[in-house]
Amino acid sequence: PVKMYPHKALLDRFKPSKAKRSWNGAVELLRRGVNTAHPVAFFEKENDTTLKQNFYICDYVKADCSVGEMFIHFAKGNQTFHFVNQNYSISAEDTYTQLAQYLQRMHGSGTFFRDLSGGNVLVQLQENQTLHFSLIDTARAHFYTYPLALELRYTDLARICNKLHWEGRERFMHLYLALIGRKVNFD
Image 1: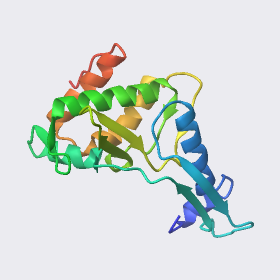
Image 2: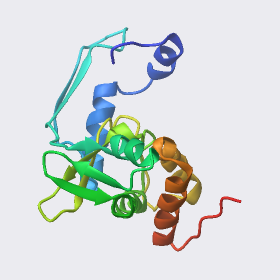
Image 3: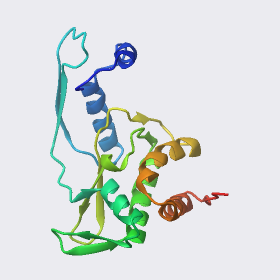
């Protein structure tokens, strides 16, 4: 942590350090088959009253972009996203479909990420032209022994949909909810 707000310092005093929470989150995500950067180590200074002397180290995640970048592009009315280094374009529909499948598997594994912003989901274009997603910033994740309830899924998805235009949100949510046998209703 770079900065610690007073209310956060009070609340976090009784939690494990952010580095340890990041480590635990990454290890549990991998155990559940959810892609994230592989943890390497975490370090904590003993008796650190500032709560800022802790460090988490993980492998570098090779990524072409983040979901947030793609969603901003689609929100501008573009129907495809071009991967410059790969000389390949993917449609908004294919992106929404693959992301919905990834997030449904994550939620189905009992993972409530709690920080599912577009910048925390990295994207790499694979050789077979599919998208490989990896989560970063794993300290806030909570885990359950059963698939997430619909309310927690909505809570997680609200942040990632923030950068999308209304039509994109509707389509993404339709695809996601269809995977769990539900229908979207924005009325």
